[in-house]
Image 1 (spheres, rainbow, N blue to C red):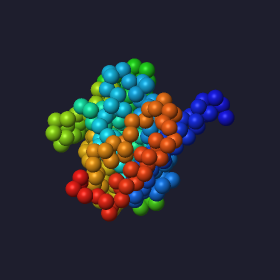
Image 2 (cartoon, helix red, strand yellow; image 1 turned 45 degrees about the vertical axis):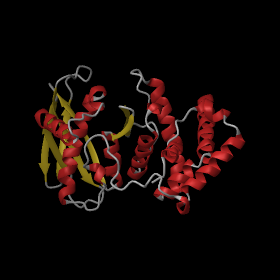
Image 3 (cartoon, one colour; image 1 turned 45 degrees about the horizontal axis):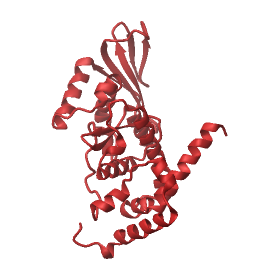
Image 4 (cartoon, rainbow, N blue to C red; image 1 turned 60 degrees about the vertical axis):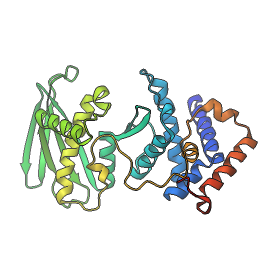
Length: 293
C-alpha cells in the first residue's frame, strides 16, 4: 500500500466514523430502506468526491455550501441509480443557486444500460471522419476512420451501436446528424423549463454524445425491454425523486446532509458525538415525530 492509499484509507475511516456517530448511516438505511453496507460504501465515496471536486473548483460555487436538503436529495438519487459513487465520472454534481444538483453522464447511461442487458458503444463523428456502415442478417457493423484525432472541432453527427447481451435481437446501429443532436439538446432545455445543465459549458462533446445515447435508448426501450430504470430516459439534471421520504425538521435534514469537513470531523469530541447521536435517534423515532413534519 503506497502513501496515497494510506491517506485515502485514513480519510475514509474518519468520514465513516463521523457518519456513524452522527446517525447519518442509520438515517438512510431506516428512512429509505437501503442496505447498511451499500449506504456506507457510497456515503464515503460520495463525500470524497465532493471534497475532491471542491478542491478543483475555480468558480467559488462549492458543493459543501449547498443546502442540506439538496445534498440529501442528490445522495438519495445516486443510491437509487445503483451506480458507482466514486471518481469514475458516472455522474456530475453542481451547485446551482445553493442547491446541489446531480446528473448522470453518458458513461453512467452506458453503465446502467449494461446492468439491464444492453451493451452500448458510440462516439461523435467529426468533419473529415469516414464512417462506413453495413447491414447484414447478423446485425449492423461499422468502421470509422479518423482524419485528425487531435484536430477534431466541427461535429457532423454521432453513432450508437447497441447489442443485447442475451441476443434477443441482432446488433443495431443508430445514426444522428448534428442537427438532430442539437434538437435533442434544445428539447431537454425546454423540458427543464429553460434550465440548461452546467455540463454543456464544461463538457459539450460529452453532452452531445449523451444526447445520442439517450435517443437510441428511447427507441430500444420502447419496443424491447420492460421495467427499465426511468433514469435511462430522463433529461439532464435530476429533480427530487417522486416519493421522497419526509424530513421531520430542518435540523434532521441538516444531520442527514452534513458538510464533510475533514478537520472538523477529526476534532469532534467523542462525548459530543454521542450526545448528537442520541438526539438524532430520538428525532428519527417515528413514535416521536409530531407537527414538525
